[in-house]
Length: 166
Image 1 (cartoon, rainbow, N blue to C red):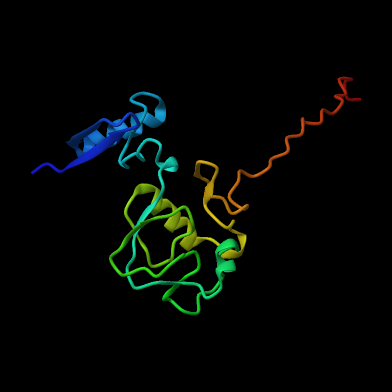
Image 2 (tube, rainbow, N blue to C red; image 1 turned 30 degrees about the vertical axis):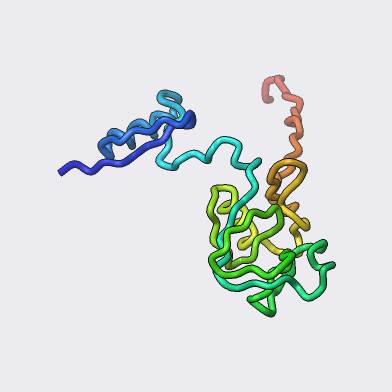
């Protein structure tokens, strides 16, 4: 019995192939032929412009002070039934759309929500902005995730002594 797998192309196509054939196509993509194929499904188009949707997993109430909604995320949560960015009480099972940081217990329902929740749960809260939303799209940045700054210096050439050795 042959094992099969599904591979995905960046343009949205997908194929179900023999595992070995799929592996050959993916590896060929690295060398230049058959580019764009991957074992991982590509993200939906414009996912960073869609407002993330979540399912509330337990009853939530807003933070006791309204000003907390305008501050960076709390580093520690003392009461798991409080959502810092909540504007009202939420019932378990309720579906919400928000441009604010989610509560760590929320269940993501969209690709963007998955990315936001994963980012939120793995980063140092004190480094985060007050919202992952910037302008009309998501920006997941904690100030530490940028590309490293590399300074290139030209090589230093040394003079060659071409005289014969005595």
